[in-house]
Image (cartoon, rainbow, N blue to C red; front, top):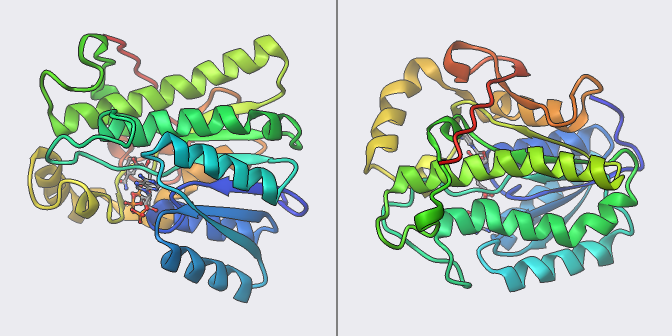
Length: 275
Ligand SMILES: NC(=O)c1ccc[n+]([C@@H]2O[C@H](COP(=O)([O-])OP(=O)(O)OC[C@H]3O[C@@H](n4cnc5c(N)ncnc54)[C@H](OP(=O)(O)O)[C@@H]3O)[C@@H](O)[C@H]2O)c1
């Protein structure tokens, strides 16, 4: 990892899972980390842990499922720093069994995983453009390969399938990463935009989403004993995309093992089926 001294990162969804590990690793490497989440208690516990280990962190609370809260979060980031060197769009929800909507009426997975991060990135673009070799890393998933953008029913109002909505949101995150790089190059913003996925990392993503119901939960339980790795291992592709000098603009990084489920980080397959 490149030295983060004097540099500032914002990690969304840093109160749990992969984001928590990523925030801790960046802080250990000298980054000042703005850790985002919804749960103030867990956020402040993480800040204390980072500070105890000699690092620097600030907790910022916001629900990404509300565009007003996203706007407020961006304002808090602007108060905390006058430049941002790294934005990791990590927070996410997976395969909610029943269709839910955000404060603005969007389907919850598209709204949280993609639209909230899209709005946050747009609000923070001026700060990022002032950053030192600024990067934006979007969390996608193996699930992007099974995804399509359902332009005829983007918000799953006509028919809702938990996995289908998740796959769409994660495909949207990957397309967003690639398109952000294209637009940055065209406009001279100087960003590196890339994407990462953790493979199958043992976090609370399933418990927080489908719980014990549905295909993704069943597959998760069946594959976990031999095809998963720890949250710490799952964080490595994100850390690679965010900090390695070998990471490339518009790159996509994940584990290099069987079907990209586990293993050390490497470039992984981009499979874009828009429809
Ligand atoms: N674990 C895997 O195998 C896997 C595989 C592929 C992709 N991913 C992706 O990796 C990312 C991290 O997942 P994870 O496994 O670490 O999940 P996790 O353990 O469930 O953590 C998710 C984080 O996102 C936050 N979050 C969820 N909804 C939010 C909202 N509306 N507003 C603000 N924060 C919100 C959570 O905060 P709360 O604690 O407040 O809920 C938590 O901090 C996600 O984007 C996920 O899609 C994970």
